[in-house]
Length: 350
Ligand SMILES: O=c1[nH]cnc2c1ncn2[C@@H]1O[C@H](CO)[C@@H](O)[C@H]1O
Image (cartoon, rainbow, N blue to C red; front, side, top):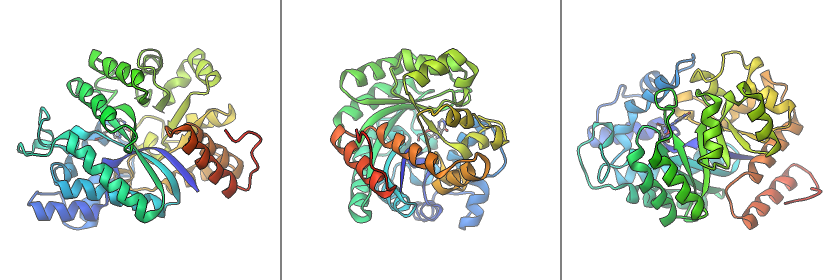
């Protein structure tokens, strides 16, 4: 029984669905069988984060701008997670990157159409809620600002407000820290507004970027969780502070190696330090389509290379539940389910 907090909807699409919509819409793809397509999209040897992010360009044109496709990827995502044994998931995406109207520039070289970022959120919500009903798990969403597109950020926070608790629980800042580490004023304003309106905040920081990006995410963006954050270890004082404050790190093991964020030897992975220090972290899949993985792959890596015990497995998932962006009452219900499944009698269930 798992809790997952960091996975990108547009990085978790079934290849069959990409092929279906590519064909239906006459949009060229780099392959016309699952194997062919995966040869271009997914990979197994480390690249850079920039190269990882380029993989989206191969298949997003088949999905973006199509109402059925957007609703369907959200629905199938929930189905996929239910099969993996996830009982609560927070899935993130950029509404702008799935739209083709009222978005500048229109992404993926699409022609201007009539699907707005606002309607994208509505469609994803429908897919997630249909999935929740059919597969009996809980799914919430996080809307991403993109580092290189500050002009979208204020609309992202407005969408968070409009759809608050209608699956949307938080704002995120994703994209390439290697190319744009800068936190533009628009991102700051969006996070300020999120805080003011009680919208939770997470932020990609210190994945490939320096500890100063993490510092800024905490101090300026007032983020509650850190997406990745491996490079925090390069600033021991900051690391100590975040440990004391029990800040949650959303760790994505396989992703961290395949994006070159961390070295190729899992036995030297920063998460070992997190484990030894009893840090507050979770294990997550990030972009399973591109990484050709499932959440189970990440747990297998942890067991095989990190001496990850059953105890740690429970602790990590309980920490994930505690650090989830659910309202308190629902968080308690989620925790109770985990305690029961893990055969634990909590001292303090909250
Ligand atoms: O590991 C990552 N680091 C930073 N950005 C990412 C990562 N994975 C995906 N995205 C970016 O987030 C967008 C919204 O889901 C994706 O389209 C991709 O550009």
